[in-house]
Length: 274
Ligand SMILES: [Zn+2]
Ligand SMILES: [Zn+2]
Image (cartoon, rainbow, N blue to C red; front, side, top):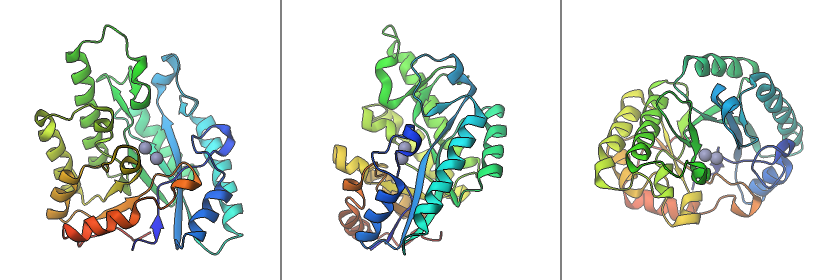
């Protein structure tokens, strides 16, 4: 049984989207017998957010503000960790973008915060130039005259972003690569090529991938899908289970069931080295 979880969230600063404090989350994992927990609040930066209306408070275009928030968040995690036996790590769930500006910003974030690990995520479908970014949770913000072709294009750019995030070599592991499928995007056979290309990129770059159990809890299927997981197992891509918990009720959710499935599918290579 995997005794660690590297992907979960808190409500620090009233900004992040967790429902509980670091103290409450750490205690919850400790009580459930975990040996290590990594807290990984969102790290979302793009210049484009300056011009996008109705952007979430977690989307930053002011780099200094984002770094300051995470600095205080990390200090708080350290303070809570010192009161517990469980090993506590400080991570970031970082949205990848392809622009040069983002890369420069990312390098600065890492230098200033020095996190224990970095999760690579893509939560936005997008225009190629990244001027238009739509969080999968806020697809209702898409202009009502968006054509199917335009939408497909933005979903293609989503997948290219996921693939490039792997190739960047920046990330300790990749989170929920086919997250868009949970929102009924990219579910037909015509999307399989991009999914294969993603798995091939993991293979080439030796990048681990998580199996996100939050998606099992919400929709009955993990992220990535069991089909993608089976292909990853064949290629011996290191896998880890993440609950992506945003509240104490969800810590460790579906870990046992996912372990059983991984054994059933013959998974032998697991990521566990933090
Ligand atoms: Zn995420
Ligand atoms: Zn998350």
